[in-house]
Length: 143
Image (cartoon, rainbow, N blue to C red):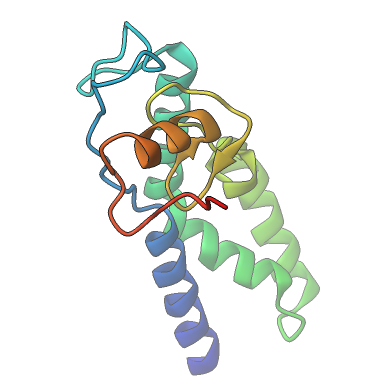
């Protein structure tokens, strides 16, 4: 059981590392930035919904990892695994799963064409790299 406990703690640490947002300062120097962009508010309702889902996932993260470990453990009796599965279905929302999240651009809320590492859409990424070097250490390939 000590092995399972250490594995669960490692998984929960990995999960919390993945959900940490990258703090990116807004760019106000180019026309590609949406006119309604305010860094203190959400661009649209979909971004607000995504934020709420991520917050719920963060709240349920430890419980979800523990129940999933119990559910997938072959050493435990079948009754206990079924009980864990039932508890997962009845008490934990489906939106707390990481697979339910859509990676959105933090500036435009665009759901497609994002660079996961920077949480920016490809348009915003190009804009921030090209003009004034807003992303430190990154340069576009030019030949």
